[in-house]
Structures are given as structure tokens and as C-alpha cells.
Length: 472
Ligand SMILES: [Zn+2]
Image (tube, rainbow, N blue to C red; front, side):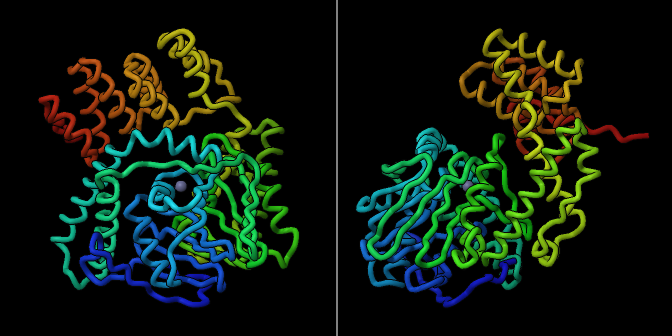
């Protein structure tokens, strides 16, 4: 399950024995010293989150303080055990996602730094604290149940124990009394250099990619580049570009500057899982560059997406193939990245429909949708997740008819997806139309009998999932 680290100069296991957390003696971090002054504390958990400690003359810097104050304290204790000191001058957030940043609050002595948009993301996300704690509590219960059925000595049980302990830390961290979410105090939009006396941290906005606020941190004296979750490893496949709006030209410009000098970088630290050698970043940059040029040139010729995919001539980076990805995985990899880049040249239908609904109400949104479909406009694309999110944004603001319009469009456009019926069912349940809600939930559960949410919703609505008629 765990990949072999690419660069392991020194590996030591740090005991994080804290009364609050460790009931057993399992170490919580694997520590890799990339140099005397740059240490990666990798959490031993399914996330394998990398918390990087930089030792500067002006003080310690922690990059990514984890998901909660509890996690922040655990990192602090591990750092104390490793370095004999634990006061930080700065904490840096590589992007605004909660799992990396909500630990800011555990370091009141430090100045927290991040991209301006990271600050906005964290501020907006704080309302989800309780819901998130509930979600993880549910996940934890699931793993605890699963564990009871496993042979303790099996590898599966060992993995489940690591997962349980991780979920337990997240749940306890989020539910801890007095826990508050704190965005970075010092923010920037384009670039910020931090002088640590003997080391410099060059922070650069990478452009919208994994989040709206991804930054890279270059430490030229140590030849180390920290990239947060710009590349997110799923198995051997480094996924990038998961936002709706992306900045590929900016990525390529920034990477070009980093890679212009062959001697400048030795290690590339990702936000999770691994540390790459420079060559992997070169390979990914070349792949992104080739993919973006191909997509732009085929789009300008007026080709549709399926034709583009059929003609695409961009080979995947060699290391991806060497890591044992299947042909099917590779096809999915190219398709995912090509789709994300292709969409930068098109317009999202969800945004157009949202504008129409905001201007003229739900009917105007539906009317525009019909027009777009009838005109078979090749300049717009439909994305199920985008319409689903739009519906939930309306639902969150109690605009139920607007939500129904967005979810209904998804049902019309993606009739084979179980989730679109589940979402529309939820909106009708909120509206008080139980009959329609039951019909929709039944359809969802019929397509996907594993839809536990749908089954539970039907029970709440006083109905049972329809027994699926046996075919002929
Ligand atoms: Zn993230």
C-alpha cells in the first residue's frame, strides 16, 4: 500500500506519544531529512500528508499545519522530539483546503502566511466545521465496524487500524471544545519572499489548479521546491487541474522559470505521499505543455472532444508507465487532463444557467438550458458535478425552486446517473413534495442499490425502496 519514498536520506520514526492521542505506541510520522535544514514529517495515515519543517537562522517554519489544533500539537511534539525545539516563527499554508490549514490555530507564536484566496477559502469554509465533524464520525464508525469483522493479524486489519486512528484524530480534532478556524494573517497574491537569515523562501502563486490558492515555495539554498497539492497522486497518476477554471499558461511560465537552471532543484515535495526528484517535475511539465498545445490546436481546428481524444498524440511521462499503471488507467489519465484543459477553451453551461436563473428566475434557467441543447452549441459544455454544486448552493440559501431547476437540468442531461435523482429528491423533500421526492429517491436507489443516503431518505419519508422488478 505505501509507496517506497523516492528520496530517503535519513528516515527516523518519531513517537508522538501524547496523552490526548496515542493510546498505543504507533509512531505518527515518518521523518525524512532532505538536508540539515529541511525535514519532511509525513503522517502515517491514508492521507500521508507532508508537513515540512524548515530550520532557518531566524527561526523554524512549518509548511502545512494539518487539519486541526490537535494535529498541530502532534506535529509540534514530533518536531520537539526530532529537533529539541518547537517554537515557530512562521506557518505557511500551501493552499486553502481545511485538511492542510485548520491547524494554523495551534501556532499562536507564529505568523501564518498564505495566498489571499486561501484566506478567503478558509473563512468561507469555517461554517462546515460541525457538518465535517459529523461526516468523519460516520466514517469512523464505519471503520470500527469493519475492524470487528477482520482478523487482527491480517494486512487489511493493519490498514484499517491506521485508518481508524486517523479518523479518530480528525474527528476529535474537529469536535474539540474551543477549536476555531484561523486563516493566514499575512497574505499575498503573486509573490512573497521571506528572508530567514541564512535561507530564503520564495513563495509564488502557481495559478488555479488543485485549488484557487496553490502556491509553490522555493528554497534556493537547499534546492528544494515545495508544491503543496498541485499534483495529487492517485496511485501512480499525478492528477492536476481539478478546478473548473485553470491557469495552464501561468503553470507553464512558473515551471519554466524553476526548471530553466538544471542545478536549481533537487527535491520536489508534494503535499501528500511523496518527494519527487527534479526529473519527475520536468516530465510532468513536458506532458502538460504538450497536452495544452495539442488541445488548443485541435480546438482551433474546430474538432469535437471525441475526435480530439482519438487523435491525441501526447505520451504519458515514462515514470507513470513504469509505476505499473494499466492501459485503462492511462486512458483515464489522459482523458481527465485533456477534458480539464479543453474546458478552458469552452464555456460552462452551469455558469450560463446560473446567470439566467439569477436574472430571470428558475424558468429562465430551464429555458436557456433548452436553447443550449437545441442549438447544440459546441462552445459550451455540461458537467454533472457543476450543476449538482449549483443546486446545492441554491439549496444552502433556501432558494428551493432555483435548486430544483439546477437539479432537474442534471436529470435531463445525465439520466443514467443515480446521484442526479438523489439530489433532485432532496430538493423536493425540502420543498415538502413528499410524493415526488419518494419517486426520485426510488429511481436513484433502483440505479444504485448501494446508495445508502437514498435508502435512509426513503425511510425518513416513510417509504421503502421499490423492489426492483426482475426482468423478463
Ligand atoms: Zn487540497
